[in-house]
Length: 401
Image 1 (tube, rainbow, N blue to C red):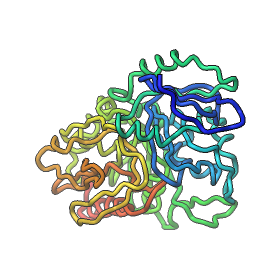
Image 2 (image 1 turned 30 degrees about the vertical axis):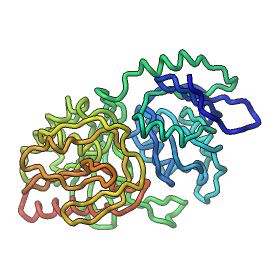
Image 3 (image 1 turned 135 degrees about the vertical axis):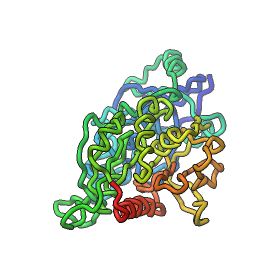
Image 4 (image 1 turned 180 degrees about the vertical axis):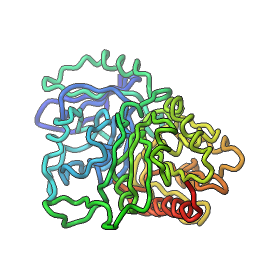
């Protein structure tokens, strides 16, 4: 079996990554001891490793960071996108960098151990990334043992036997178990007690009621909605249309999330179809929510070769011609050729030409494949939240119920 080069260290390697095809990468364990199996992907973002590791869309995946300096701002209790990370593990090139940031409360290694996340450093992440880019995202097992004793063949079999993400409904693993309200707003430097996230703008009452379907929702999405004076109620992924409509929403948001959209669609698509029967009800979807909306409208989705994971993806708005630099994390894509009549592509990837958004002609229904909440990533796409609010405002003016 081919063995990739490792960095030179004073201690013996105590970490290993074994791919399903038998490729072995040896390195040095970080975080918790143990092992984890999943799909190996790479993320090209230069910032926001804590937000990336806590993005529920990474359920079932092991993240390879192409940026070498991971850990440089430590970790804190605020910059998380969900309370319990869903990623299976991480791969990094260099040792975890010592934290150098006034907001840091814990070293990244201690934070990883607290969540039982297995990591490995000292790998040739460039070689691994090229392997993923050229041959597709493989299944693999990451392991960390203090004694460095590994049964490589057993790990290979475990990786080969893992079924992969196609057909896997992971939204049910990361969704909330019951409905809840959300009131925290976006980052505001200088808040009391070091707390950076403020609340809803100080007004007499929220202007809009939004119900968010939680397929694995990121907190910064909720913060952006709150900051636009929305009262947000989050409901589980399997909520029925009746559950959602009893909240009398001005609009419904479809969140990001992990896994195969067709698998999640087994219970979510009937709900979305019932919501689409309300012709004036604004719907806005992001990532898995975009894929779920497309399926409910009659389109198809497909597994990508290696997916989009990073904060530097150029996307063109086909209506305005404007190019946005976006944050992305998805391994499935809407087949644009399958979009029915009246469903119009709205955005396109300038990396590979894949679909990045859609809208329903003549209706306040739209979605995008990328992450406009920018956590982490650029803020070019925040206008989409305002577009959603504008649609709800227009509905109210017309007396929509």
